[in-house]
View 1 (cartoon, rainbow, N blue to C red):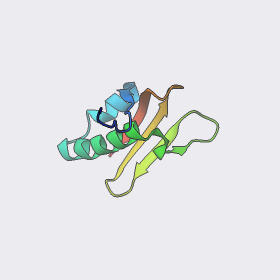
View 2: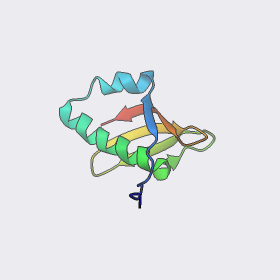
View 3: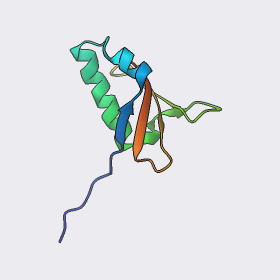
Length: 85
């Protein structure tokens, strides 16, 4: 009997605006952001849809992070456009 598989995570890619923000974060902020990115990769529907766009806006009030992203049609790649921590 084969082991049960968990939810399939999407691959996460960051584009230039997100990378620019990422280099400004300290270790603690990066760690908090990492948790949010993992959550989004497992469940891309976490964020709120931005009206009139394909973008989603995910804000984690507990960790104090915000991620703006979109997901490809097959939900295999999550493209991060902006991060804030």
